Length: 301
Image (cartoon, rainbow, N blue to C red):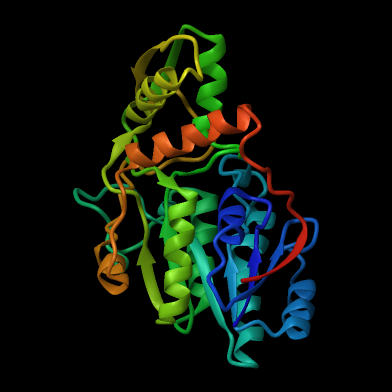
């Protein structure tokens, strides 16, 4: 089986390329190798490679900048999935479209089910919801949230940098979700690829927390590992004290029970995965973890 993975330079793309299942050939493409805003380039590539599966992990993810770059966000997040789906259909290939908790408005009182009504609050969220629609019923949609991994730009590594320099931080405590470790998302994606059953699915690490709770856990675990000299004081603040151009859903926990039932597996608690990620950060500081160099890379497992 042959897969094409977009977004190979991102944290999820790297995790996907690091965990290609036996029997799969995988072509990983970063932004330099494939511009997802160039729909003609996408069509040419898919027709030339004829993959059995495209995992579209690439996206326009600058949530706040998307409010002023709406056309670009739409071209990448809404337009590209439609092109992939249409061209793949010509030779019987499948699209697995990676989506986001931002397609929901955060007003629910319980975790969101895959078929719950979407009502995105931001341009980014709207573009991802339209991308799901463009992917169509023959595709696999996987929504996830709060992605992080070692060696990449994300909330955890941003907090680590701040915690090394500052004794006090302020982090919002009224946005609740589930951190999701990229290697475990990749495991779910490959399992869904093997299952090959179209539909919408969710993935999250077990448990839920606020950004403030996540930051406190990062401080505790990082200090225990010696990654920061001391845990800072982290003050909880409300979202209205930290205004951003894009509105965030206040509650975006995803219900992944249908995914786990289909795959007959489970997920680890977010705090356990956070500890594993920080251990990788520590190993990398000691030179113990090789770095993946993104680009146009072909892997056969």
